[in-house]
Image (cartoon, rainbow, N blue to C red; front, side, top):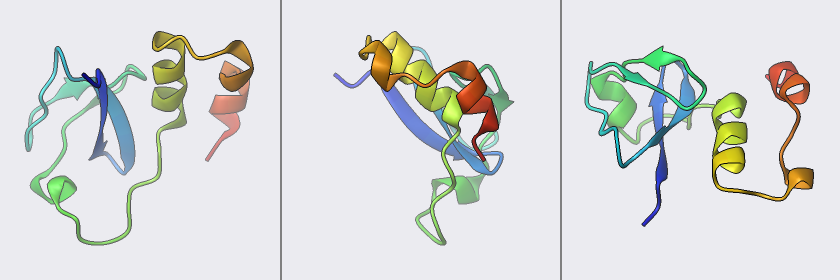
Length: 82
C-alpha cells in the first residue's frame, strides 16, 4: 500500500499519510511539511494546471520512506526552492 499521497491545497501539492488522514473539501489536515491546510472543492478537480509541489513535503516523504541520503535534499536546499 502507498502510505503517502498528494493533495493540492493552499496553492501547493502537499503530502499526507494516507493511514491517518483522508482529506476532504474544507477539512483541515496537517501536511507532512507541518503546514495545516484545508483543500477547497476546486482542489479536487482536474481543471487547470497542476499545483506546484511543496518541496518540504517531498523531502519528508523521502526521509520517511528511507531513500538513500544522496537522494534527499538538505533542508537549506528545500527552503531555497520555489
